Amino acid sequence: MKQFSKALLATAIVFTASPSFAGYDEFDCRTNNQMKNAGLECITCGIQKYYADKGTPVDVSDKWLAMIALNIQKEYGYNTVRSDIDKENFQKEVIRRIQTYGFCAEYLGKDTKKVGRSREYKDMSHADWTYFNQLLNRDARPSEKQMADAAEKLGFKTGWTSSTPALENMNYLFEGMFENRSLDEKRALFKEKLRQALESDYTVSGEKKEKSKEFIAKGDKDQGLTRCLADINAKFMKKPMGDKETHAFCGVMANSCDITRVNLDSQKDFCILKGMALKPASSPISQPPVFSGDGGGGYRPQPPPPPMPSRSGSGQK
Image (cartoon, rainbow, N blue to C red; front, side, top):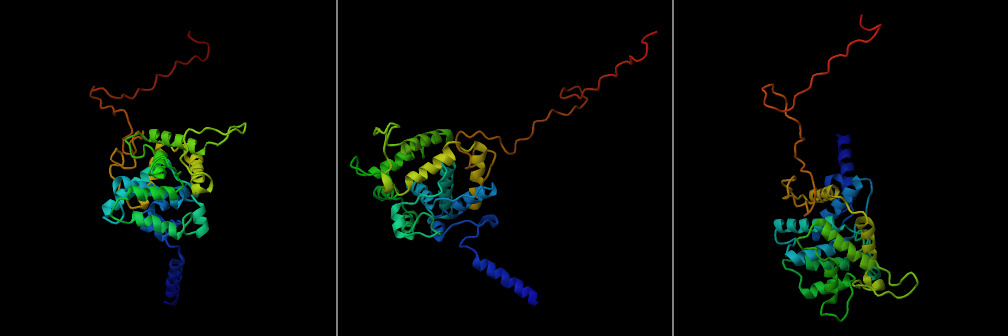
């Protein structure tokens, strides 16, 4: 009995000492309560689990996921507070954008550095999360003004071209995000935006270059966005995931969020994006019909050829 009590005590100590989230399928991931409040905890843990299972652990930017989530709520009106169904739809749409565009390891800006951050909050301060969750955790879409303010905080270029230039520049980066385009088309558009964002200001000879489009703020006013985009470009756009891998990646995130997937071998599976070429998981292996002996056609096993006559000795007599 005493040994049993010691075992219970040891178990209690282990659970007490565990991080705030000891994750899905016995997988421990880095997260925080603010991520949970935003409905993004299971997604970041799913990303981390997918790569850990492949033997290549990754860091995931909280801020990048928050930016994607904010755009989802603005477009669809989905949120985490209205209903469980609404929350699931919200998570599905965030997952689909991570499938398409990937993620960066860090999106750390000067304003966050000033306030300070902990390992728990990765690349956002508590104040950053408070700001974003005030927009995400409510039963209302963010207004144009709120989206414009958020875009400026996220490092998009401001100016006098319109009343909401930072928002227009964020929309420019994600052009086609909500359009009925194929996965390849969306990635091609995004890859071109990354090329523009990461293009040097000067030619190889040192002359000032006339850039086609500037939509990211200069210097440290970009709040870490340029570095984040460079990371995404290197990890996801130079050699994009194939359709099969993209589909599997989504599946791990969906499992982490306890999202039920039906018809995994049809276009009804939300993880299958437009243009994906996937062989249905349940398709039978094509086999020739067994020979029935009734003359009805089908596969007939061929008898072995007759043995060759012996040619040993002196031959015929």
